[in-house]
Length: 346
Image (cartoon, rainbow, N blue to C red; front, top):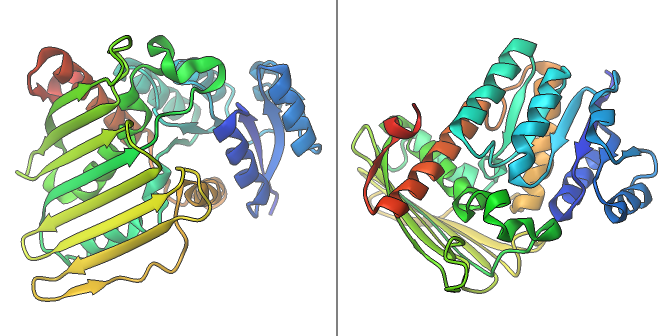
């Protein structure tokens, strides 16, 4: 079977990890890379001499021999480039957040349908052997009906990003869209049996008074139609990278944790403890976990979806919901009020 030929748009710090994952995945071929700066193009050409390198992404997506495109760009460019990719008839893997507005999310979903192309969103934590095991136990009824989820992150400050885009509110959208979006997605995923989220109440603060729009400390409560609720919390004013997930149900509870010197470490520590209502046990996680590893699984799954019709890790609809929950949280912070999801999804 012929390899799925990928074009990669964006070769920054995370884009280079995408390139590595594509290059090592069976059934995938990294055929072309587009990058804006001369330095990143030079680095891409050195790292992957077999790939064609472009400055203008439109040249890449204009090629007939490209099957799928992987977009790893600053958030404000997502809709422009992703819509061009889908119009060009390519399957698309788009890094989170899907877009900066619900209107743009809807537009990308429409283009994918009209052109008969796959639209996958980069919520790779769903593929984690750790966070995924939590989902398996929840769905198997280990804790009974899930009623509460806590997803919490304590980490070092964000990297600046190319040309400082992550610290520019006009380009990043908000820091809620940057990382807590993953945690909103996990909470919705774990509480799928409780229905969809109905409302969000959030609060946030910045440690630097000169940039109050960039909120280092963030917490949100999201309610679900079945009566369950979740708490999502993050601080960027700490050190290293430490994430915790707790899920409680009508008869038991789960507690998962992951720690690393950095988010993209290849040598993390992690654990999962489970309570069935009577006994506490340690659940072995045999496969190493971390976003650099889940990214490899995400590329492999994209290949399987294109070749064999396998289900995607996260669809456009999942990406749209994640953006909507983040936008509801932003609105809640501004208003100091609980925001109904129906208002955001209109």
